[in-house]
Image (tube, one colour):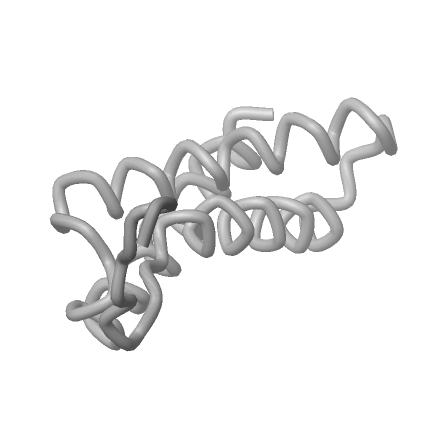
Length: 89
């Protein structure tokens, strides 16, 4: 269980680092992106371990990667500038 937690945290950190390095203009500050990736990895490992209830590390890491990527995708901003108009205009 400890190996799963450490592995999923490292995987989430690696995904967050890659996203922050690849898309710095579309993500908020790196101090928010990196913990989000780690938390997503840990939560994904927890959900996968709870749902499947067996010790296959590979499957648990896949679940951690999916949830980490999904949580990082929530931080991505639109690429172009959106022109904001008021509701009365």
